[in-house]
Image (cartoon, rainbow, N blue to C red):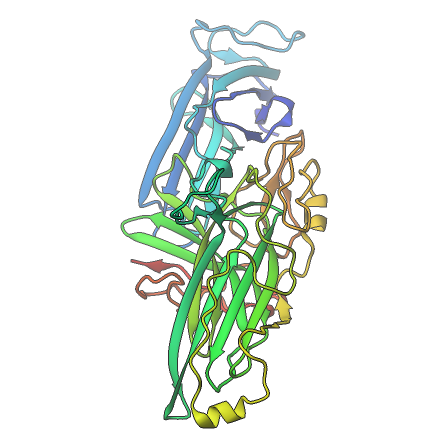
Length: 474
């Protein structure tokens, strides 16, 4: 064995997750097999962000620092005392005797430190580094330890998180103005059978605009097929868009979860009620960081005819203090549904074909064909020691007895952290899938751009999903 047998950093009580503004304390331990000359022993606490133009490339093209604090634990002139084990002899100037030495330290984390994050094109890293600086022509000894910062996103601080205010009536009603949930609608006109035309009205809504890990996103879709041609299956996808500010903005868009329902018959109107359990995901936005931004969307679409609506949603750490507005899945229109539009009478030949069929006022209920979330989130969260209890299946927010969980990665296995003495515990959830990039464009109206092509490997779970949207460079 060499002269330096052990050189490591440990944090007090084995913590790995901290909050902005908290003190961070720990110890630098050194075990020597022989006396070691040194000039200084220093410890540094840093927080920084780096972004690259290429996936999984540490050659950053853009960087920003959040904090950088250093402490001198010892120096050769002994102007600063050197803590040693009680049974060891005093340290002589410029030399550490053989044996084990401990050097305690403490830093105060800034209140503006952003949440830790790691993605294919960049990351936000917080770490403690220690170094033993030796005399000239000798090798310095270094070690480091990464820790994580969670700046909880309180969904209640986001404007209109429970829904936007409806227009004020001419005669205001007593009490606060009524709210409507996240809702969007699109009408697609198309041609079929060469000479015939029709349209499809697609309306989608969610009960809230913000969710926490384990909460059920309640989806309602209303489809009016005003044509004599059946539609393709309806698909709802939870999308994650991570934007990296390199020389140009790089957008990494991928499908997190997907649900597929049946199609709508000709001259029919149908409703579709479904839910998506929010898996372990990094929080929306990243306050304090100007190089990386995270957005989430719920996209509901038909492939034929091509019709898409996109609803922005927020993923946070503190649930909305409001009961969901949507009822349990069942027949009938929800209170926020738009006014019913009854189409004009179809052409005579199509009216005869539709004779005897259900009227638009009698919508049918669509069934679900496939769901990407095969593993219940309850089992996923239960595999993490100290993780908070997930939200009830009805989508109502649950109170968190412990600190909110931290998810820093967008990869296939997501490190899932909770308060406690344990280290990082990777989840076994299959809800977060590895990216499968393709040349698809953006789901929310931006222009198409070049798409970065990735691997072709598919897991059994990926076969249930449509190709994920890959990162593009604007």
